Each structure stands twice: as structure tokens, then as C-alpha cells.
Amino acid sequence: MSRELLLPLILLVAAASFLLRFVPMALLRKPIRSPRLVAFVGLLPYSILAAMVVPGVFSSAGSLPASAAGFAAALALALLGRSLPVVAAAAAAVAAAVCLCA
Image (cartoon, one colour):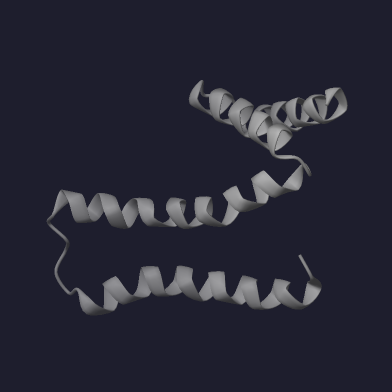
């Protein structure tokens, strides 16, 4: 990513995060009673983060098989409840091993 794009992207993400939290507070005076809407609003930041991270994951290793293997390893360890450093280290190690073996 070029340095010229970095600051505008950071500002865009900050503005989106602020608006996602401010607009409902400003427009909705009463508490939200719908459990589905509460769940949707609660999961929105995670989905935005995933939408920003996943493209970088699949383009970071330089080869799609290595990226996919690292992603699969990270997903499996995350679902098993491992800590973030363990998940990140294992994903990097698996992606590096696939790159070296290919």
C-alpha cells in the first residue's frame, strides 16, 4: 500500500467507525428493542474489520495456496480458542512453509 493512500484510508475508517456509533445514538432516542437489530449493530464493526483484513491476508504471501493455508491454519486455531499471538505465529509459519515447499 502506498503512503499516499494510508492517511486517507485511516481517516475514512475512523469516520465510518464514528458514524456507526454516533448516528444511531443521535437518531434513536429510545433503546433498541429488537434483538436482531441489536445483534446486527453489535457485529457490524467485526464485519467491517473482516472486510478490510481478508483481502490483505490473501495477497500478503505472494501465492494464493500459501495465503489460503495460512488463513485456514489461523481460522482453525481461532475456532479452537487459541490466543492471538499463537494464531498469528502459526498462520505465518504455515504460509512460510507452503511458500518454501512450493
